[in-house]
Image (cartoon, rainbow, N blue to C red; front, top):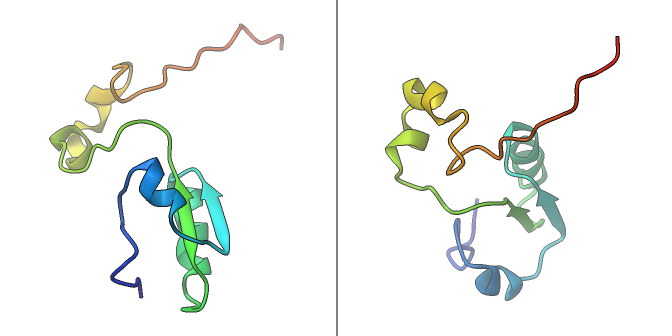
Length: 87
């Protein structure tokens, strides 16, 4: 269970004010699963770093059915490209 002094979403400056036993880089499905498992031990403090802006409350993020609309939109999608791969 999170302490009341541990913010769920904060600035970099606020994040750096806290001590962590583990820092998970990436808040995707794997990163958040690792963080959740680590915090099953109440004595362990975990920080999760995620790139980009906070989109809490944004309907494009909060509505699963809108997911296809964010693909290719640089506000939500890093739009990583690759070169053609040799088979």
